[in-house]
Image (cartoon, rainbow over all chains, first blue to last red; front, top):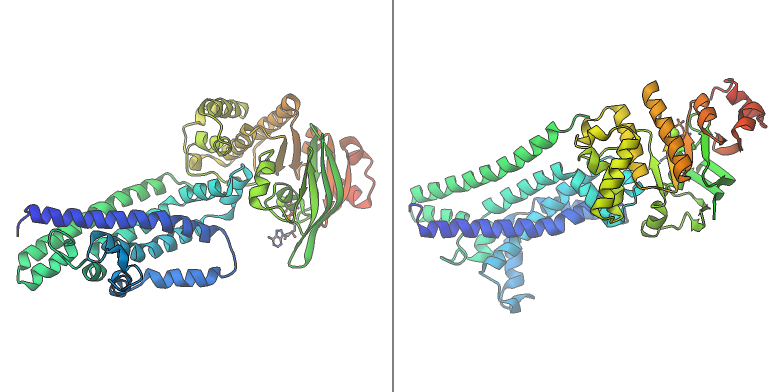
Amino acid sequence: MMLTQDVWEVISLSLKVTTSSVLLGMLMGIPFGAFLGLYSFPGKRLIIALIYTCMGLPPVLVGVIVYLLLSRYGPLGSLDLLFSAEAMIIAQVVLVTPILAGLTMAAVHGKERTYWETAKSLGATPLQMMLTIIREARGGIWSGVAAAFGRAISEVGAVMLVGGNIEHHTRVMTTAIILETRTGNFTAGLQLGLVLLAISFLFNSFLMVGMMNQMKSRRR
Amino acid sequence: MNRLKLKDLEVSYEGRTVLQVEQAIFERGRIYGIVGPSGAGKSTLLRVMNLLEKPTRGSMQLFGTDVELPSLTYRKGVPIQRKMAFVAQRPSMFQATVFDNVALGLRYRNLDKSTVQKRVEHALGLVELSPLARQRAQTLSGGEAQRIALARALACEPELLLLDEPTASLDPYNISIFERVIQQVNHQQHMTILMITHNLPQAKRLADACLFLHKGRLVELADTHTFFHHPASAELQDFVSGRMIC
Ligand SMILES: Nc1ncnc2c1ncn2[C@@H]1O[C@H](COP(=O)(O)OP(=O)(O)OP(=O)(O)O)[C@@H](O)[C@H]1O
Ligand SMILES: [Mg+2]
Protein backbone atom coordinates (compact mmCIF):
# COMPACT_ATOMS: atom_id res chain seq x y z
CA MET A 1 0.00 0.00 0.00
CA MET A 2 1.55 3.28 -1.09
CA LEU A 3 0.12 6.69 -0.24
CA THR A 4 -2.99 6.15 -2.29
CA GLN A 5 -6.33 7.83 -1.91
CA ASP A 6 -7.37 5.24 0.66
CA VAL A 7 -4.43 6.11 2.82
CA TRP A 8 -5.22 9.82 2.69
CA GLU A 9 -8.72 8.97 3.73
CA VAL A 10 -7.46 7.05 6.73
CA ILE A 11 -5.04 9.80 7.73
CA SER A 12 -7.59 12.54 7.40
CA LEU A 13 -10.16 10.62 9.43
CA SER A 14 -7.54 10.06 12.12
CA LEU A 15 -6.80 13.76 12.23
CA LYS A 16 -10.46 14.67 12.19
CA VAL A 17 -11.36 12.34 15.07
CA THR A 18 -8.34 13.29 17.13
CA THR A 19 -8.66 17.03 16.63
CA SER A 20 -12.38 16.99 17.36
CA SER A 21 -11.94 15.01 20.53
CA VAL A 22 -9.05 17.15 21.76
CA LEU A 23 -10.98 20.35 21.03
CA LEU A 24 -14.08 19.06 22.80
CA GLY A 25 -11.91 17.83 25.66
CA MET A 26 -10.30 21.29 25.91
CA LEU A 27 -13.70 22.95 26.02
CA MET A 28 -14.64 20.88 29.06
CA GLY A 29 -11.33 19.99 30.67
CA ILE A 30 -9.65 23.40 30.71
CA PRO A 31 -12.40 25.38 32.49
CA PHE A 32 -13.03 22.47 34.86
CA GLY A 33 -9.34 22.09 35.63
CA ALA A 34 -8.97 25.85 36.13
CA PHE A 35 -11.92 25.85 38.50
CA LEU A 36 -10.34 23.02 40.52
CA GLY A 37 -7.01 24.82 40.57
CA LEU A 38 -8.54 28.07 41.84
CA TYR A 39 -11.28 27.20 44.29
CA SER A 40 -11.60 24.83 47.19
CA PHE A 41 -14.86 23.19 48.14
CA PRO A 42 -15.99 20.06 49.98
CA GLY A 43 -15.33 16.89 48.00
CA LYS A 44 -12.53 18.43 45.96
CA ARG A 45 -9.96 15.84 47.04
CA LEU A 46 -12.20 13.05 45.86
CA ILE A 47 -12.68 14.69 42.45
CA ILE A 48 -8.93 15.19 42.08
CA ALA A 49 -8.30 11.54 42.96
CA LEU A 50 -10.88 10.53 40.36
CA ILE A 51 -9.27 12.71 37.70
CA TYR A 52 -5.82 11.30 38.36
CA THR A 53 -7.24 7.78 38.14
CA CYS A 54 -9.00 8.60 34.89
CA MET A 55 -5.82 10.06 33.38
CA GLY A 56 -4.54 6.50 33.20
CA LEU A 57 -7.75 4.77 32.13
CA PRO A 58 -7.07 1.80 29.84
CA PRO A 59 -8.45 2.76 26.40
CA VAL A 60 -9.97 -0.69 25.95
CA LEU A 61 -12.00 -0.25 29.10
CA VAL A 62 -13.28 3.11 27.88
CA GLY A 63 -14.08 1.43 24.58
CA VAL A 64 -16.13 -1.24 26.29
CA ILE A 65 -18.07 1.26 28.37
CA VAL A 66 -18.84 3.56 25.45
CA TYR A 67 -19.73 0.48 23.39
CA LEU A 68 -22.25 -0.64 25.98
CA LEU A 69 -23.69 2.87 26.26
CA LEU A 70 -24.13 3.18 22.51
CA SER A 71 -25.13 -0.37 21.67
CA ARG A 72 -28.66 -0.90 20.48
CA TYR A 73 -30.08 -1.77 23.93
CA GLY A 74 -27.80 0.60 25.82
CA PRO A 75 -29.03 3.86 27.37
CA LEU A 76 -27.86 5.86 24.34
CA GLY A 77 -28.72 3.21 21.79
CA SER A 78 -31.45 5.30 20.20
CA LEU A 79 -28.81 7.74 18.92
CA ASP A 80 -27.60 5.01 16.58
CA LEU A 81 -23.97 6.12 16.86
CA LEU A 82 -22.14 2.82 17.30
CA PHE A 83 -19.51 2.16 14.61
CA SER A 84 -19.37 5.80 13.52
CA ALA A 85 -16.76 8.55 13.67
CA GLU A 86 -18.90 10.22 16.35
CA ALA A 87 -18.63 7.13 18.54
CA MET A 88 -14.85 7.23 18.25
CA ILE A 89 -14.87 10.91 19.15
CA ILE A 90 -16.99 10.22 22.23
CA ALA A 91 -14.61 7.50 23.41
CA GLN A 92 -11.58 9.72 22.89
CA VAL A 93 -13.18 12.67 24.65
CA VAL A 94 -13.56 10.39 27.66
CA LEU A 95 -9.87 9.53 27.37
CA VAL A 96 -8.45 13.03 26.92
CA THR A 97 -10.67 15.21 29.12
CA PRO A 98 -9.18 13.97 32.42
CA ILE A 99 -5.67 14.61 31.07
CA LEU A 100 -6.60 18.14 30.07
CA ALA A 101 -8.41 18.81 33.35
CA GLY A 102 -5.60 17.33 35.45
CA LEU A 103 -2.75 19.17 33.74
CA THR A 104 -4.72 22.45 33.61
CA MET A 105 -5.41 22.11 37.31
CA ALA A 106 -1.73 21.57 38.04
CA ALA A 107 -0.71 24.50 35.84
CA VAL A 108 -3.26 26.87 37.36
CA HIS A 109 -2.52 25.71 40.88
CA GLY A 110 1.18 26.29 40.25
CA LYS A 111 0.57 29.98 39.59
CA GLU A 112 1.02 31.90 42.78
CA ARG A 113 -2.01 33.17 44.63
CA THR A 114 -0.85 36.73 43.93
CA TYR A 115 -1.86 36.39 40.27
CA TRP A 116 -5.47 35.74 40.94
CA GLU A 117 -5.48 38.32 43.69
CA THR A 118 -4.11 40.87 41.25
CA ALA A 119 -6.81 40.04 38.72
CA LYS A 120 -9.54 40.23 41.35
CA SER A 121 -8.14 43.46 42.71
CA LEU A 122 -8.20 44.98 39.22
CA GLY A 123 -11.95 44.34 39.10
CA ALA A 124 -12.18 41.00 37.29
CA THR A 125 -15.45 39.10 37.56
CA PRO A 126 -15.00 35.44 38.57
CA LEU A 127 -15.13 34.44 34.89
CA GLN A 128 -12.68 37.13 33.77
CA MET A 129 -10.34 36.13 36.57
CA MET A 130 -10.44 32.50 35.49
CA LEU A 131 -9.72 33.43 31.88
CA THR A 132 -6.77 35.57 32.96
CA ILE A 133 -5.30 32.73 35.00
CA ILE A 134 -5.84 30.23 32.17
CA ARG A 135 -3.98 32.62 29.89
CA GLU A 136 -1.25 33.00 32.48
CA ALA A 137 -0.87 29.22 32.88
CA ARG A 138 -0.96 28.59 29.13
CA GLY A 139 2.52 27.03 29.02
CA GLY A 140 1.45 24.19 31.28
CA ILE A 141 -1.93 23.88 29.60
CA TRP A 142 -0.29 23.47 26.18
CA SER A 143 1.69 20.52 27.47
CA GLY A 144 -1.65 19.04 28.52
CA VAL A 145 -2.95 19.56 24.99
CA ALA A 146 0.14 17.86 23.56
CA ALA A 147 -0.28 14.91 25.90
CA ALA A 148 -3.98 14.65 25.03
CA PHE A 149 -3.28 14.78 21.31
CA GLY A 150 -0.58 12.13 21.60
CA ARG A 151 -2.86 9.84 23.57
CA ALA A 152 -5.77 10.28 21.18
CA ILE A 153 -3.96 9.84 17.88
CA SER A 154 -1.98 6.78 18.93
CA GLU A 155 -4.78 5.05 20.78
CA VAL A 156 -6.23 1.91 19.24
CA GLY A 157 -8.30 -0.08 21.74
CA ALA A 158 -11.23 2.28 22.11
CA VAL A 159 -11.55 3.32 18.47
CA MET A 160 -11.35 -0.30 17.37
CA LEU A 161 -14.20 -1.30 19.64
CA VAL A 162 -16.60 1.57 19.08
CA GLY A 163 -15.58 2.42 15.50
CA GLY A 164 -15.21 -1.09 14.21
CA ASN A 165 -12.44 -0.34 11.68
CA ILE A 166 -14.89 -0.14 8.79
CA GLU A 167 -13.30 0.71 5.47
CA HIS A 168 -14.17 4.22 4.14
CA HIS A 169 -16.09 4.84 7.30
CA THR A 170 -14.27 4.37 10.58
CA ARG A 171 -10.81 3.16 9.59
CA VAL A 172 -8.12 5.32 11.20
CA MET A 173 -4.34 5.04 11.17
CA THR A 174 -3.96 2.84 14.22
CA THR A 175 -6.68 0.40 13.24
CA ALA A 176 -5.34 0.31 9.67
CA ILE A 177 -1.88 -0.54 10.97
CA ILE A 178 -3.28 -3.47 12.90
CA LEU A 179 -5.16 -4.71 9.87
CA GLU A 180 -2.20 -4.37 7.51
CA THR A 181 0.11 -6.13 9.92
CA ARG A 182 -2.35 -8.92 10.55
CA THR A 183 -2.79 -9.55 6.84
CA GLY A 184 0.95 -9.67 6.32
CA ASN A 185 1.41 -6.20 4.74
CA PHE A 186 4.24 -5.28 7.07
CA THR A 187 5.56 -2.56 4.75
CA ALA A 188 2.21 -0.81 4.65
CA GLY A 189 1.87 -1.14 8.41
CA LEU A 190 5.30 0.36 8.94
CA GLN A 191 4.67 3.16 6.45
CA LEU A 192 1.50 4.15 8.25
CA GLY A 193 3.35 3.91 11.54
CA LEU A 194 5.93 6.35 10.23
CA VAL A 195 3.20 8.77 9.12
CA LEU A 196 1.72 8.55 12.60
CA LEU A 197 5.10 9.27 14.12
CA ALA A 198 5.65 12.22 11.77
CA ILE A 199 2.30 13.76 12.65
CA SER A 200 2.93 13.39 16.37
CA PHE A 201 6.38 14.85 15.96
CA LEU A 202 5.15 17.82 13.91
CA PHE A 203 2.36 18.59 16.34
CA ASN A 204 4.61 18.38 19.37
CA SER A 205 7.25 20.55 17.70
CA PHE A 206 4.73 23.34 17.28
CA LEU A 207 3.84 23.13 20.92
CA MET A 208 7.49 22.92 21.94
CA VAL A 209 8.36 26.07 19.99
CA GLY A 210 5.49 27.82 21.73
CA MET A 211 6.61 26.69 25.15
CA MET A 212 10.25 27.58 24.47
CA ASN A 213 9.26 31.10 23.46
CA GLN A 214 7.33 31.35 26.66
CA MET A 215 10.34 30.32 28.72
CA LYS A 216 12.63 32.71 26.89
CA SER A 217 10.39 35.70 27.56
CA ARG A 218 10.44 34.91 31.24
CA ARG A 219 13.24 36.37 33.21
CA ARG A 220 12.13 36.30 36.80
CA MET B 1 -21.08 60.09 50.99
CA ASN B 2 -17.60 61.47 51.37
CA ARG B 3 -16.46 59.08 53.98
CA LEU B 4 -14.82 55.74 54.21
CA LYS B 5 -15.68 54.06 57.44
CA LEU B 6 -14.61 50.79 59.00
CA LYS B 7 -16.63 49.45 61.85
CA ASP B 8 -16.14 46.64 64.32
CA LEU B 9 -13.56 44.87 62.22
CA GLU B 10 -11.95 41.67 63.42
CA VAL B 11 -9.65 39.31 61.56
CA SER B 12 -8.40 36.07 63.05
CA TYR B 13 -6.43 33.14 61.73
CA GLU B 14 -6.89 29.81 63.44
CA GLY B 15 -8.33 31.47 66.52
CA ARG B 16 -5.58 34.10 66.78
CA THR B 17 -6.84 37.66 66.38
CA VAL B 18 -4.43 39.58 64.16
CA LEU B 19 -6.50 42.70 63.57
CA GLN B 20 -9.14 44.47 65.59
CA VAL B 21 -10.46 47.90 64.64
CA GLU B 22 -13.47 49.26 66.47
CA GLN B 23 -13.90 52.21 64.18
CA ALA B 24 -11.86 54.18 61.67
CA ILE B 25 -13.07 57.05 59.52
CA PHE B 26 -11.29 58.40 56.47
CA GLU B 27 -12.27 61.57 54.62
CA ARG B 28 -12.42 61.61 50.85
CA GLY B 29 -9.51 63.21 49.05
CA ARG B 30 -6.92 62.88 51.79
CA ILE B 31 -3.71 60.88 52.02
CA TYR B 32 -3.31 58.56 55.01
CA GLY B 33 -0.08 57.00 56.15
CA ILE B 34 -0.28 53.64 57.92
CA VAL B 35 2.66 52.81 60.16
CA GLY B 36 3.43 50.24 62.81
CA PRO B 37 5.86 47.47 63.63
CA SER B 38 6.20 44.38 61.50
CA GLY B 39 3.31 41.97 62.03
CA ALA B 40 1.03 44.70 63.39
CA GLY B 41 -1.66 43.88 60.82
CA LYS B 42 -1.10 46.70 58.30
CA SER B 43 -1.17 44.52 55.19
CA THR B 44 -4.09 42.57 56.59
CA LEU B 45 -6.03 45.84 56.97
CA LEU B 46 -5.51 46.81 53.33
CA ARG B 47 -6.22 43.29 52.10
CA VAL B 48 -9.49 43.23 53.99
CA MET B 49 -10.45 46.62 52.58
CA ASN B 50 -9.59 45.40 49.07
CA LEU B 51 -11.82 42.33 49.62
CA LEU B 52 -8.89 39.92 49.28
CA GLU B 53 -9.33 38.66 52.82
CA LYS B 54 -12.53 38.06 54.74
CA PRO B 55 -12.72 39.29 58.31
CA THR B 56 -14.62 37.31 60.93
CA ARG B 57 -16.66 40.44 61.62
CA GLY B 58 -16.95 43.94 60.39
CA SER B 59 -18.43 46.32 57.89
CA MET B 60 -17.11 48.98 55.55
CA GLN B 61 -18.85 52.06 54.31
CA LEU B 62 -17.22 53.08 51.06
CA PHE B 63 -18.30 56.55 49.95
CA GLY B 64 -21.98 55.81 50.30
CA THR B 65 -21.98 52.04 49.78
CA ASP B 66 -22.46 49.84 52.82
CA VAL B 67 -20.71 46.49 52.79
CA GLU B 68 -21.13 43.73 55.32
CA LEU B 69 -17.73 42.12 54.83
CA PRO B 70 -17.96 38.52 56.15
CA SER B 71 -20.96 37.63 54.02
CA LEU B 72 -19.88 39.43 50.85
CA THR B 73 -19.59 37.06 47.87
CA TYR B 74 -16.99 37.51 45.14
CA ARG B 75 -19.63 38.36 42.54
CA LYS B 76 -21.41 40.93 44.71
CA GLY B 77 -18.08 42.49 45.61
CA VAL B 78 -17.05 43.26 42.02
CA PRO B 79 -18.73 46.72 41.76
CA ILE B 80 -17.17 47.69 45.09
CA GLN B 81 -13.81 46.34 44.03
CA ARG B 82 -13.98 48.53 40.94
CA LYS B 83 -14.13 51.68 43.04
CA MET B 84 -10.67 51.00 44.39
CA ALA B 85 -7.22 49.85 43.36
CA PHE B 86 -4.43 48.15 45.28
CA VAL B 87 -0.68 48.03 44.73
CA ALA B 88 0.99 45.17 46.57
CA GLN B 89 4.51 45.30 47.93
CA ARG B 90 5.77 42.91 45.28
CA PRO B 91 3.33 43.34 42.40
CA SER B 92 2.71 40.50 39.97
CA MET B 93 3.08 41.18 36.27
CA PHE B 94 1.21 39.00 33.80
CA GLN B 95 3.00 37.44 30.83
CA ALA B 96 2.09 40.15 28.35
CA THR B 97 3.33 43.55 27.32
CA VAL B 98 3.49 46.46 29.73
CA PHE B 99 0.63 48.05 27.80
CA ASP B 100 -1.61 45.00 28.22
CA ASN B 101 -0.79 44.80 31.90
CA VAL B 102 -1.79 48.40 32.47
CA ALA B 103 -4.90 47.93 30.32
CA LEU B 104 -6.10 44.87 32.23
CA GLY B 105 -8.41 46.59 34.72
CA LEU B 106 -9.95 48.69 31.94
CA ARG B 107 -10.60 45.63 29.80
CA TYR B 108 -12.30 43.93 32.74
CA ARG B 109 -14.60 46.96 32.82
CA ASN B 110 -15.36 46.50 29.12
CA LEU B 111 -14.28 50.03 28.20
CA ASP B 112 -13.98 50.76 24.49
CA LYS B 113 -10.66 50.55 22.74
CA SER B 114 -9.95 54.25 22.37
CA THR B 115 -10.67 54.95 26.04
CA VAL B 116 -8.35 52.10 27.03
CA GLN B 117 -5.64 53.45 24.75
CA LYS B 118 -5.99 56.98 26.11
CA ARG B 119 -6.04 55.99 29.76
CA VAL B 120 -3.12 53.57 29.49
CA GLU B 121 -0.99 56.17 27.71
CA HIS B 122 -1.89 58.74 30.31
CA ALA B 123 -1.07 56.40 33.19
CA LEU B 124 2.26 55.39 31.65
CA GLY B 125 3.05 59.06 31.16
CA LEU B 126 2.37 59.76 34.83
CA VAL B 127 4.97 57.24 35.97
CA GLU B 128 7.32 58.35 33.18
CA LEU B 129 7.53 54.93 31.54
CA SER B 130 5.76 55.54 28.23
CA PRO B 131 8.71 54.17 26.21
CA LEU B 132 8.28 50.74 27.81
CA ALA B 133 4.72 50.17 26.55
CA ARG B 134 5.74 47.38 24.12
CA GLN B 135 8.21 45.65 26.45
CA ARG B 136 7.31 42.28 28.01
CA ALA B 137 6.29 42.97 31.59
CA GLN B 138 8.26 39.97 32.87
CA THR B 139 11.52 41.65 31.88
CA LEU B 140 10.98 44.83 33.92
CA SER B 141 13.36 45.71 36.72
CA GLY B 142 11.95 45.73 40.25
CA GLY B 143 11.59 49.51 40.37
CA GLU B 144 10.01 49.67 36.92
CA ALA B 145 7.55 46.94 37.86
CA GLN B 146 6.55 48.97 40.94
CA ARG B 147 5.87 52.04 38.81
CA ILE B 148 3.97 49.99 36.21
CA ALA B 149 1.86 48.49 39.00
CA LEU B 150 1.04 52.03 40.12
CA ALA B 151 0.15 52.98 36.54
CA ARG B 152 -2.05 49.86 36.32
CA ALA B 153 -3.90 50.92 39.45
CA LEU B 154 -4.22 54.56 38.37
CA ALA B 155 -5.53 53.68 34.91
CA CYS B 156 -8.66 52.36 36.67
CA GLU B 157 -9.22 55.87 38.06
CA PRO B 158 -10.19 54.52 41.48
CA GLU B 159 -11.84 56.60 44.18
CA LEU B 160 -9.65 54.85 46.72
CA LEU B 161 -6.03 53.86 46.22
CA LEU B 162 -4.43 51.35 48.59
CA LEU B 163 -0.65 51.08 48.64
CA ASP B 164 1.32 48.44 50.58
CA GLU B 165 4.88 49.67 51.09
CA PRO B 166 5.07 50.86 47.50
CA THR B 167 8.52 52.36 47.81
CA ALA B 168 10.16 49.82 50.12
CA SER B 169 12.56 48.51 47.49
CA LEU B 170 13.03 51.63 45.38
CA ASP B 171 16.02 53.92 44.91
CA PRO B 172 15.69 57.64 45.76
CA TYR B 173 14.95 58.63 42.17
CA ASN B 174 12.11 56.08 41.85
CA ILE B 175 10.81 57.09 45.26
CA SER B 176 10.59 60.73 44.23
CA ILE B 177 8.69 59.82 41.05
CA PHE B 178 6.31 57.68 43.10
CA GLU B 179 5.68 60.40 45.66
CA ARG B 180 5.12 63.06 43.02
CA VAL B 181 2.56 60.90 41.19
CA ILE B 182 0.71 60.13 44.40
CA GLN B 183 0.47 63.83 45.28
CA GLN B 184 -0.57 64.69 41.75
CA VAL B 185 -3.51 62.25 41.55
CA ASN B 186 -4.52 63.22 45.04
CA HIS B 187 -4.74 66.90 44.07
CA GLN B 188 -6.13 66.55 40.56
CA GLN B 189 -8.56 63.66 40.98
CA HIS B 190 -9.31 64.07 44.64
CA MET B 191 -8.30 60.45 45.09
CA THR B 192 -8.27 59.06 48.62
CA ILE B 193 -5.01 57.28 49.33
CA LEU B 194 -4.05 54.85 52.11
CA MET B 195 -0.39 54.04 52.15
CA ILE B 196 1.54 51.64 54.37
CA THR B 197 5.11 52.73 54.93
CA HIS B 198 8.02 51.98 57.23
CA ASN B 199 9.59 55.25 56.17
CA LEU B 200 8.47 57.81 58.75
CA PRO B 201 9.88 60.86 56.92
CA GLN B 202 7.89 59.75 53.90
CA ALA B 203 4.69 59.58 55.95
CA LYS B 204 5.47 63.09 57.22
CA ARG B 205 6.05 64.36 53.67
CA LEU B 206 2.96 62.86 52.07
CA ALA B 207 0.24 62.12 54.56
CA ASP B 208 -2.48 64.45 55.80
CA ALA B 209 -3.14 62.03 58.64
CA CYS B 210 -1.57 58.84 59.99
CA LEU B 211 -2.64 55.60 61.61
CA PHE B 212 -0.61 53.60 64.06
CA LEU B 213 -1.27 49.88 64.24
CA HIS B 214 0.26 47.84 67.01
CA LYS B 215 -0.36 44.16 67.77
CA GLY B 216 -3.44 44.15 65.61
CA ARG B 217 -5.06 47.17 67.23
CA LEU B 218 -5.58 50.64 65.82
CA VAL B 219 -3.85 52.61 68.54
CA GLU B 220 -3.95 56.08 67.05
CA LEU B 221 -5.40 57.96 64.09
CA ALA B 222 -4.57 61.65 63.96
CA ASP B 223 -3.49 64.40 61.61
CA THR B 224 0.16 64.09 60.72
CA HIS B 225 1.48 66.97 62.83
CA THR B 226 -0.24 65.80 65.99
CA PHE B 227 0.66 62.19 65.21
CA PHE B 228 4.39 62.84 65.15
CA HIS B 229 4.75 65.75 67.55
CA HIS B 230 2.11 65.08 70.15
CA PRO B 231 1.45 61.34 70.12
CA ALA B 232 -1.19 60.46 72.67
CA SER B 233 -0.24 56.87 73.48
CA ALA B 234 2.92 55.60 75.06
CA GLU B 235 3.29 52.99 72.29
CA LEU B 236 3.31 55.60 69.54
CA GLN B 237 5.74 57.78 71.50
CA ASP B 238 8.08 54.80 71.68
CA PHE B 239 7.55 53.98 68.02
CA VAL B 240 8.21 57.44 66.55
CA SER B 241 11.26 57.90 68.72
CA GLY B 242 12.65 54.56 67.54
CA ARG B 243 12.54 52.88 70.92
CA MET B 244 10.02 50.19 69.99
CA ILE B 245 11.72 47.06 68.83
CA CYS B 246 8.99 44.47 68.23
N1 LIG C 1 -2.93 33.73 55.99
C1 LIG C 1 -2.47 33.89 57.25
N2 LIG C 1 -2.51 32.86 58.12
C2 LIG C 1 -2.05 33.00 59.39
N3 LIG C 1 -1.55 34.15 59.89
C3 LIG C 1 -1.49 35.21 59.06
C4 LIG C 1 -1.95 35.14 57.71
N4 LIG C 1 -1.76 36.34 57.13
C5 LIG C 1 -1.21 37.12 58.07
N5 LIG C 1 -1.04 36.45 59.24
C6 LIG C 1 -0.49 37.00 60.50
O1 LIG C 1 -1.15 38.22 60.76
C7 LIG C 1 -0.25 39.12 61.37
C8 LIG C 1 -0.32 40.47 60.64
O2 LIG C 1 0.25 40.31 59.36
P1 LIG C 1 0.41 41.52 58.36
O3 LIG C 1 0.95 40.97 57.09
O4 LIG C 1 -0.85 42.27 58.30
O5 LIG C 1 1.51 42.40 59.10
P2 LIG C 1 2.16 43.78 58.63
O6 LIG C 1 1.78 44.80 59.64
O7 LIG C 1 1.80 44.06 57.23
O8 LIG C 1 3.70 43.48 58.76
P3 LIG C 1 4.93 43.92 57.82
O9 LIG C 1 5.26 45.32 58.19
O10 LIG C 1 6.02 42.98 58.23
O11 LIG C 1 4.51 43.75 56.40
C9 LIG C 1 1.10 38.49 61.34
O12 LIG C 1 1.41 38.01 62.62
C10 LIG C 1 0.96 37.35 60.37
O13 LIG C 1 1.78 36.27 60.73
MG1 LIG D 1 2.86 44.02 55.36
